Length: 491
Ligand code: NAD
Image (cartoon, rainbow, N blue to C red; front, side, top):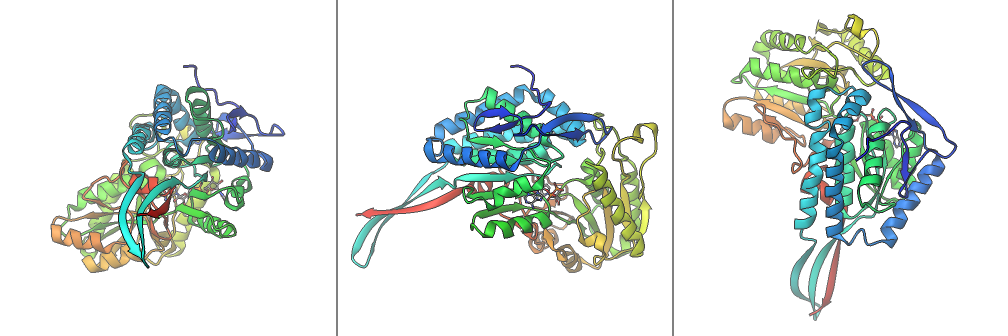
């Protein structure tokens, strides 16, 4: 095992690690320091064309899609190879993403690497065929069965906030299903993807063309995946605005789209809940990775009579999650990814003031010598607005929590659902019947009750409404990459 070198980060096309045609590269900055982490190959449309061609050829002309045992072996090899480089990957993840060290033990790194093993086990255990028995229709007796087959070439487009998790949650099930893949990572985080490219190419038997990884500073290069007729499925995670564009451009070739999009999730606190714990955990959640998580709870809905108490509790908790060096094992809240992202968050904080809200905590950039460089923003708590405010309706993607009063369980459900999104949420309460009614009433793809954690390889994750179409992870996430063929033979 040699160290992974990702500077400059290569493309992986047709089994070859190579620079972009024309040799262009782009810089990747450390969001905590603004230092250069490395440079990445800046793919052109010709490179993307070659990657799609390689994936198509590998799908159409090899036994990859039918050799289940070989694929399971390759997935385990990829997991083991990534694990053998885990400390290098951790360092890179912290530097490239600004991800707090603590989360690399879970969803930022170690979780998604381990999950490849779960997928390999699923490939081994999966019922690829099902016997539907004999039937007779218009005098013809037939034996019927179904078989599950890989959908074909997958174009995977991913964001920057949890790049290991989201890259693996697409590559893993797609390869497990027998698909071939072209992954286009976010322009902010190409190095992690290139590390996977290098490890897959040099330390696994994954055949050439099966996994292609193409970084580019130009969103348009990724957009080719959405229009090219050789691509069968686009698996996208990112903003709802981009998801809509992808759905429109994929319509021309009627390819399947699988979308994991934004969220504005609510933590609903019932009047019998432990308010202190609920407010603390919601504040922690909102500050996690500087609020750059699609499923984090960013609206705290509390009984009106406990509004002031809830604000004080959340304020006290958030004050304890001041942004800090992501290398520090105690840090929850690191920097945000870029200057542009920080400006976007600051724009929302200005908007909250203009709409009549009160900034209870934060609202600015933290001071200190170690914060002169880097994209830092203070955890910010907003009160005095109702759910119609734009900061309560729109995804901010920063450490910003809005506290909103409710008038009982039904009202809390109404407010939680008064959102274009439906990704996740939390419910806090002690009466199981009341909690169950709220769980049943909230229209989201995941919910945590009284601190329960739903994240896991076997748990489907995704959104209702404008938070997406389809499910990632779990058996459901794997089956997104499969077609179903029904076959009948004379009985
Ligand atoms: P984004 O939508 O700007 O970009 C995501 C990816 O899409 C990037 O790789 C980008 O290069 C690419 N892209 C941009 N325009 C494109 C186009 N027209 N055609 C094809 N590709 C295009 O999102 P982002 O800023 O990178 O990530 C943040 C967003 O992602 C947030 O809205 C967040 O909620 C969402 N997100 C959702 C999930 C989920 O699972 N639901 C997970 C993480 C992040």
